[in-house]
Image (cartoon, rainbow, N blue to C red; front, side):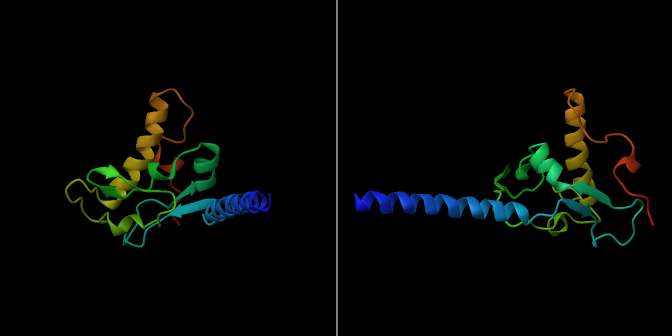
Length: 138
């Protein structure tokens, strides 16, 4: 009987530990992210504010929809993986093969998702006007 209780307590402790790590991991990310890269010397438009919490919690968009690590042409990004700056792979000046330049990568990822939702008749964010996403330049 004693072994069963220890096993049960151990199992409950492990579950609590894994849940707390998941909760802490989710709270590491700010609710709002400003997409602005130091890789650009000048901006034509203002930075874009992304409501990370809305996208992940409210809209249930998986991390791998935006973040990626490609191996053999497949996105193998996992939620627990460290997030790299986009500019680590995407050059701000030019596309290199299949790797789009930084601005095109941002636009393809965000606009592509929003336009796909719009085409499917689902609610979405902005798809047409630059200023609907970009803040006014200061």
